[in-house]
Image 1 (cartoon, rainbow, N blue to C red):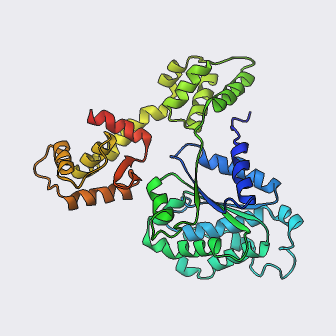
Image 2 (cartoon, rainbow, N blue to C red; image 1 turned 30 degrees about the vertical axis):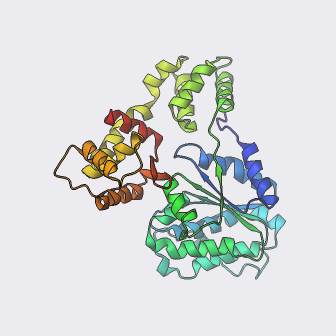
Image 3 (tube, rainbow, N blue to C red; image 1 turned 120 degrees about the vertical axis):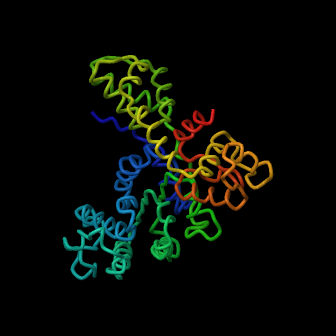
Length: 367
């Protein structure tokens, strides 16, 4: 039974906007576990193939130490896996057409290989995509990772140049990410690698339609059992609208013949039970000043840190006179928290918590 809730209309909306010249590159943000990857792989990619668009999916978390190798392997693998389809729509596989080997050795690029050991492979990947000479969509997942290290700058600049500085309009991109701060570093800051080169779209939160679809699956599997729709929707909201988490709960309910959502949450929602310990471990490892700043942000006081009142608030939250609290030390704490993807800029001078579940935990700690 297929539990995947299709968002074909949203995928169609994006691709139509690209085809109509309204979009060339788009960023889509949502916190982790909101279904972005499933949307790309199971909604966008099949739709692309039906429209004659070649698509490459790249997960930059596949090897966090070498995003360039990940990109290269993803391009070559995509061509290999779609060789039969490509043969029907392009002449790239004719003798002497490619100019770059697509042998098994090429496909099996070791992700542990260092960039300096393969100086020409990125250019080869770009050449392969150019030689396709057809509409191409690069789906770059967890793209904010490219902003985490200085050594990724050359690859990021080359990728931007390939996508943006073109004489044609064949290569377009969907950038997905789970860190608002990371995406800001890539797309919004004036010195960002992809500054002003992509438009932002909201990733729609799951709603009643998702609940109705999944409850329909349950009804089919169980030969007619109908679960309470209102309780189901409230449960989804309590789970921060995470689709996989909600589906896993439903599957456990079916397996154990449980129809009450309150009982199911107590028995089967292991994520809820494990997160507090995970967050507690994370919180306890932070420096005292970082803890105080993080708690203030969670309580809605994520601004005016550098004023006299802001410094007093941090001191009050610390309850430790031995910690030196200055504008400089607060700035350093904010930078550390950003680097750990714990906070982000809601707007200039106002900070927020990246993970809504962490925020809920911190509010409980600060109360």
